Image 1: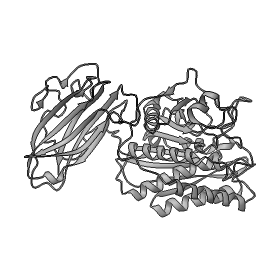
Image 2: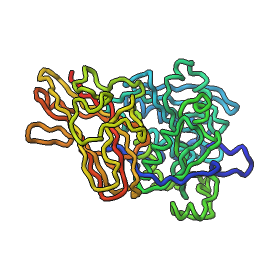
Image 3: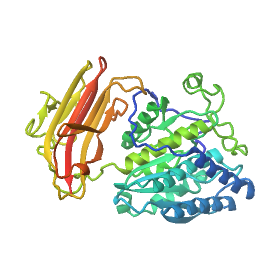
Image 4: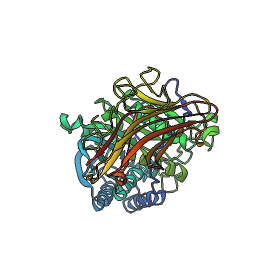
Length: 471
């Protein structure tokens, strides 16, 4: 991370900084990114520094060797990679840009980190940690077999320590049409500080949705977070300046951990989050592996989630929608279930239009359901059920399921639950879910949503724009 422009400035909280205590929005398919593999990347970066004068500074052999290592790993995993060179006062530097060659190239989700160190040390926390985490997430995605809706791109920036030069060079050399395709940039700079905090960037309103998703993820893991305005100190700044949504995480630098923060996160009050910040002791021994493990799983969660985000706004699967009144704009037509579930109440937003299905939200023990019968052609080679869902809750325990909604298929006398969402899946915006129903081709089945709430504290499951398509 680049040094503060204000002498003596450490970690600066935005005025009125918030302590997040909401519930989890963790997706069921959030990956467990390997901390062992990530640590192995950090061991390699330490070895590179040791073999090249003790640092990985821009313009020196240690930096180029670091860039070559990252590029080789991504090349082997099947990424389309570019080593982008640019000039600095310290000599030539490089950005490593890696793109997964699948997904809609008109909608790009990026994650990045700076790869260079300061001249005085190997920079293993600052910012080997972020770079290793982003690298391992990219490799894990390539190995996962996932098919992204959007194009994934990863950036490893050079010369951040000289003034964010690599990320600025990249953004400034993107044609305007290409800039417009970048839907989100996520930045990870210092994520394994030895006296860690759990900070989430809060300095770009355009990125508040991603910011809140990060908060919800950590809270679902019983980790409290604190908002931070990093004041242009890291590589998201170039993206933010163009109006691109940005978010990110940070475990702390030269700032001092307060007593309240030590109570919240553990560690030592009155000491720096990273006492070796920008010093020669920022070595492989200057890491908190618990922080690293939590942070890289958060990176994976965001990449898996935003890889599938619908930025185009069109119907999710191909083919005609076999459901009638799928957006509920004709009220209860074609649907059966509890009275009042389909509503145009303004208390909860619809995904599109005015009507939606609002299950639960009662704050008392109750069950509600909604369903529609549909025939799936026997000639179909594949069939998918998709829906948009928004979940808000008053439940305050981040790890206990209290209230649920189940997505079910009723086939004669057999009911199969395809997915269950709960108060732990809280989301401030609609999230699209797609489920495979190919096994029901040639049958007439009922698509059913069943909500169940316990005796206190409401959870609202709001569903809209449902589609069952067969191709």
